[in-house]
Image 1 (cartoon, rainbow, N blue to C red):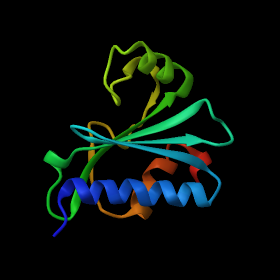
Image 2 (cartoon, one colour):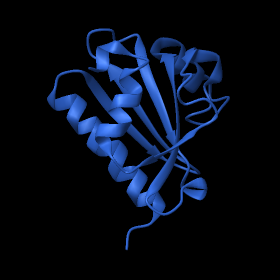
Image 3 (tube, one colour):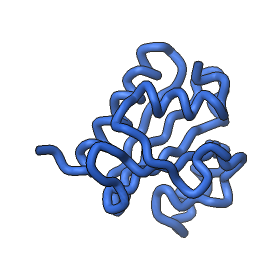
Image 4 (tube, one colour):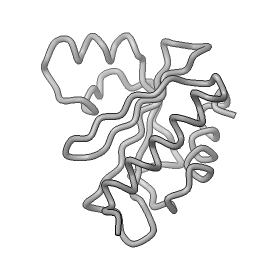
Length: 125
């Protein structure tokens, strides 16, 4: 049986593959304390969607996730400065997503995650 971390990683990877195949975004995954996916828009490379999955807060068939829109250039500057760990580039946040509020529980469904992200970023449709 897969762990919550493995399920979140698979979910984020499947979404990334879908976006790559559709020519919508590139994809970067970081597995640390939590699992972080970064989907950088191809048509607007200054925008990146950061999705964070919380293995320790995910239960059963549901993942706890949170997402926001970030400025890619600013995020890269913050990373280069070495001041924070990946996923904590808070000063690069452009928009918090209201439908993710303090995090939401969703099924391990790439369709569901993509629907929620597209509510905030129409370019993901």
